[in-house]
Length: 57
Image (tube, rainbow, N blue to C red):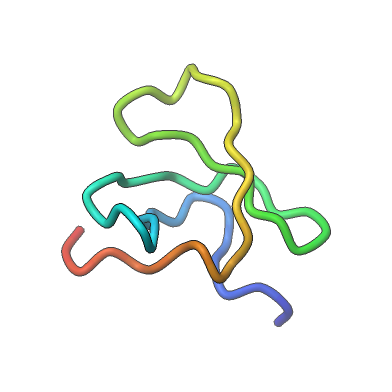
């Protein structure tokens, strides 16, 4: 498997672990995510190295 996370996974930002995101899609090594608290917002793009699995879900 090329990617570590799949659509629907909850992740956090490496530089801001308190911000939780939900992955919506993965294309060309880029994860497109939205904030857990505001899923109607514009998609945010992150590389895998910028994301971490949250300590507690």
